Image (cartoon, rainbow, N blue to C red; front, side):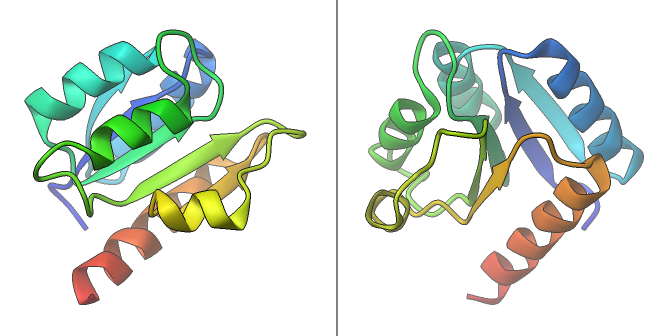
Amino acid sequence: MGNKKVLVADDEIHIVQVVAMKLRNNGFEVVTADNGSDAYKLCCEEKPDIILTDYQMPGLTGIELIEKIRGTSGFENVPVIMLTARGFAVDDQQREKLNIAECISKPFSPKELLNHVENVLQSSAVS
């Protein structure tokens, strides 16, 4: 899985730091943003292989970010994992419409998240 680029977008800086460290320690290149607007700019500049985004962020919410990404040429099929706080659910219809690969509830273990990232990248490479 090495040399894959991951965009991590979350307004909780401690989550970004823990997730980025876990991914970097496992061979991923990581770019981070603490709001949806910056995440979109980084996405266009850095062209990540996978995006991890929080549901609730300033600037653009995770849903708005994904909608904007899906409407941008070249990003229609970039895998996205949505991180959600308890009580914020993405319904199946929205998940399918926006092509969200996984929804993971907080709190999660960094190891569990790493497994999800690797699995999503592996299955997106196969399809």
